[in-house]
Image 1 (cartoon, helix red, strand yellow):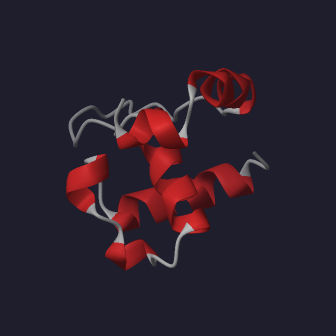
Image 2 (tube, rainbow, N blue to C red):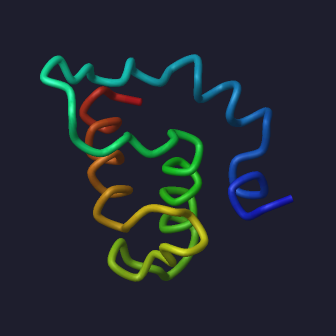
Image 3 (cartoon, helix red, strand yellow):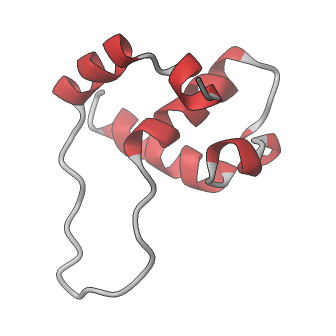
Amino acid sequence: MGIVERLVPDELWELFQRVMPEAPSRPQGGGRRRHGDREVLAAIVFVATSDCTWQQLPTASFGLSGATAHRRFSEWSKARV
């Protein structure tokens, strides 16, 4: 079991999927592929439960940057998730 599965167990992930907003579409195409929501949620949980800042998020553990996690946190907060 990896860090993502430990921080976001299946039960939590199922609950979160029920309230998660639809990913925005990119009608123009191109750009980078969006990071997985479960990995982003795990990164957010990690930052929230540790003394880590967004900039200190271990990219190798989650596969995304602290800036990406913070941006998604802001999106989801604005959507009242």
